[in-house]
Length: 111
Length: 116
Image 1 (cartoon, rainbow over the protein chains, first blue to last red):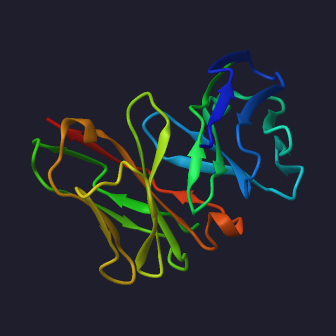
Image 2 (cartoon, chains in turn blue, brown):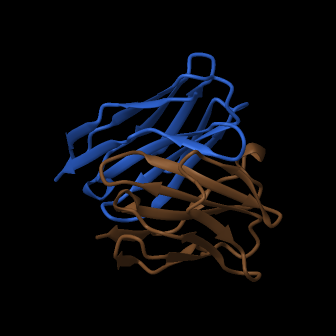
């Protein structure tokens, strides 16, 4: 059974700092991995999708990497801003048209 | 930009009542999903739907739950007889290609269900 773990559970940084969020998964046989952002009481906003054949994806200040063999992904956020404050969720395609989610990393960027 | 819309945003119901949560997926998408998130917990898969039938469901999705695509635009989740533990945020999602075909999933804003 696929399990997804995200570390740290919470992170507080000053504005402008570069930071890394970590995601690990137990079964490396995945189709893809997706990073989402969730604001309090809101839905999930897709940030990046990495297919299993890819090593990384970039969108603006965000860069996500995938190491399938070791069961790890990282989300790198450059030059963080207060507007980046949210919970970041990692999810892997666990087979049969379903995503398995981690519990998330709650990020606070202080002005 | 196309988006997934959900109604209602919040519903309060008494235990044992039937609830229908509604979703309008992105118009050209072919795969539809329901997920839920109990407060403070992980987002959990409930069901996936493709070609007018359920393609996968979790152990949470028991006989009290059903899904339907009554017309070309709506996708509904029905809970027949709600329990206290059904209180959660329910998210609808859609995808053009499906997750196994490396399609991206797009989520709605959620419907918060409170069972009293």
